[in-house]
Length: 260
Image (cartoon, helix red, strand yellow):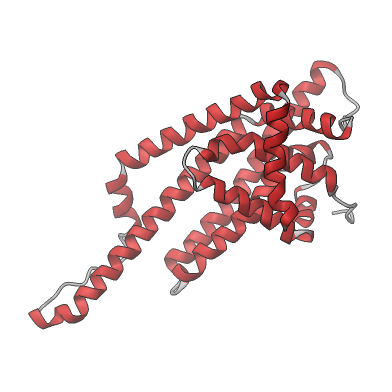
């Protein structure tokens, strides 16, 4: 777990030392700022309709006599808190998805960053048999496709857990901790994905690799998740997390798995 936490700081140190990595690190940061800024503006502009949509299913008790406020008053407070929690959760998920979508657009830059880090740390990069522009095109295409696959997987899981929180009695207590746990385990899959793409691992093999080392992966993803809670810091951490994810793959390479 300690190693999982330290990987982020190792990525920052490597970026600080090697200025050749700075242009590649700047592009995803700028794209993330643009995506999250646009999403935040939309959330602000449509906060009222979104809140109404999320809370339409909640009961709206009314006091029929003055003494009914003994239980109607606390019920209204609890329902208001539940509505605020649902809106906050929906806003956080919207920003997270926008953040991941920006990473998908920035995937070619992050892939090259990961390749250069691998060359620095390992002395060589795992290459395909292709060369020239065809190799560049295919590597970029694989990076974008892998990013979209990870984004869709994360969106499906989070939407499923959100539905549990909204529709299942008592789910409001279970869904938020599960969302945090899923996010913590997803983030290593996200930021180690570029190095894993070059190794041509299937998505099932990647999930097995994550789960086989879940304490370290959870610590790495949990540290990344905490940085996302700090406005501004979450943008700067994108390249550092890719560097850390690449180092994670180099130090703990996925073992061969049975054919799927």
